[in-house]
Image 1 (cartoon, helix red, strand yellow):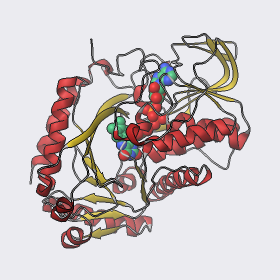
Image 2 (image 1 turned 120 degrees about the horizontal axis):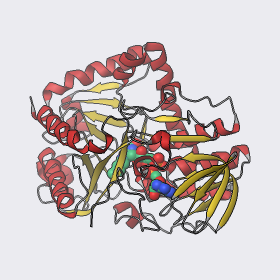
Image 3 (image 1 turned 135 degrees about the horizontal axis):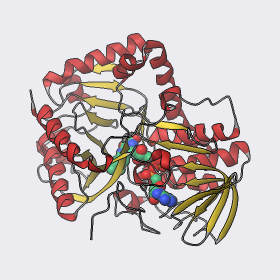
Amino acid sequence: MKPYDPMFASSPGTGLAFPASYWAATAGPVPADDGPAPPAVETDVAVIGGGYTGLSTAYHLARRYGREVTVLEANRPGWGCSGRNGGFARMAFGRLSFSDMIARFGRDEARRLFGRTMASLDTVRELIREGAIDCDATDAGHLKVAPKASRASALQEEAKLMQRELEYPAEYIDAATLQRDHLGGTQSHGALRIPDALAVHPLKLSLGVLRMARAAGATVHASSPVTGWRKEGATHVLTTPQGSVRAREVVIGTNGYTPPGLYPELNATLFPILSHIIVTRPMTDAEIAGSNFVTGHVLTDARKLMYYWRRLPDRRILFGGRGLIADTPWRNANHRDNLLRELIAKYPALAGISIDYDWHGWVCFTRDFLPRIRRAADDPSVHYGVGYQGSGVSLSLYAGRLLAAQIAGDGDQPPIEAAGRPVERFPAHRLLRIPQRVMFHWYRFLDSRG
Ligand SMILES: Cc1cc2nc3c(=O)[nH]c(=O)nc-3n(C[C@H](O)[C@H](O)[C@H](O)COP(=O)(O)OP(=O)(O)OC[C@H]3O[C@@H](n4cnc5c(N)ncnc54)[C@H](O)[C@@H]3O)c2cc1C
């Protein structure tokens, strides 16, 4: 059987179980959904995809604007990235660092954009509060760690720039302080500290928003992939295995799992990339002492092929990274071992640690590395939120809020200008896995240098 690759597969599956992740093992009881869509559905707004984007759109539409909304999820709500990510809710806009934002958009626009990344994190906080979502959220902040001494000065500059240009209390933590107060190991050469970032249990968060959306009046159908889409006059007719859904407006929230041809404007515009996670067994007292892994911050490192990791509430370590092209069992097993090797290279005191869980998912890139949260160019009744570049926990939940406001015509929640440009097509899209391979080799080379 061919490995699943969202660039080519006509569907992400139907009614599939959650992957065997640490999150699925610890999420507790899964709340009810509305089961498969019945043969004939009429709705005001149909939302395709039951992740953070889709569920947040549904919640905000139903709760704040009293709209009738129906979510169609191919598998089960939270099955995609939203139930399997690292749980780092950060202030992020695509792949741009804050200095990139200033270089790309100029100081004033970068400041506005930075405000929106803050608003996205506030949306996460609000949703957790409004829904009393028990998702093990902690609010310790984010450390971007220099894995080599030579990378520390750039982080120091980034902290100064954020203080000066964005008036934001980022700080640089020197190597000695980092090793004493946060984490030891061989690759802790200083860090940029961004005080605003949450760590969450991502599946509990998805299921919490599912509960909120349904309580607000939205209908959420599982096992209901949209397999066809046509228009009859002003009405959208979406085909599901059971029948059809007729809607006045449609929201696309399928991100990295978007099947080719779902909506022509998105054809050849999205580039799904694999991201893998391992979760270790709980650390022993000796391992914690040996690595001084005491920090509650979410962690990333200053590399092209970045690793992301954090200590979980039960003393395990979650460690993730990209680098794989194809989703095959042999490659996945190999990559899992590589991740463990990288973790131990950072913290030799963990040499005896083993992996209890590993899984992976597809993050979504665009050609200019920027997300799109907008109305379709060719049809004002179609809306989409896609392309979070692997940093979508906070932005996708915020996107749902913005898309709902866009549909309801609520001027108090204006769209993000930088996410509103038309989405560009990749040339030779079907061949992108070839340059991706070359690019990953190049990134590994750059990361290996001094
Ligand atoms: C391993 C991994 C780690 C990550 N870690 C982080 C992190 O720590 N921090 C961070 O900010 N971001 C992280 N991300 C990215 C983040 O999880 C995503 O940006 C975010 O969850 C996107 O949410 P979404 O709702 O747009 O898409 P998804 O949650 O992926 O949902 C899309 C849904 O659409 C459904 N679908 C697809 N086609 C159809 C169809 N035709 N009909 C009906 N349904 C359909 C799919 O079944 C899927 O459930 C990570 C991603 C991965 C894979």
